[in-house]
Image (cartoon, rainbow, N blue to C red; front, side, top):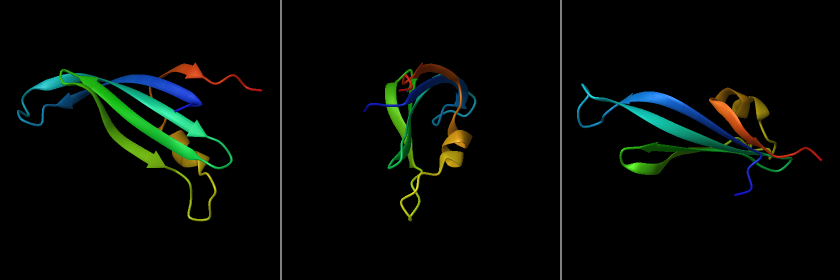
Length: 85
């Protein structure tokens, strides 16, 4: 909820039941980064609909947000960015 960025991308993936078949998948990446939280959640949509794929919590054990990890996970086209205050 309340992301700082939303990115959208397209990837080609092999069908898990038939490796000879490939499917184009649209993914959306929701990114939240502030002093206390660093989180990236990836959702994909294909023939089976939207599905949560993974989530990365980039907050270290010391409680610091690792923005470099978020930067490496960014991908696709930026479609929303929270206005800067």
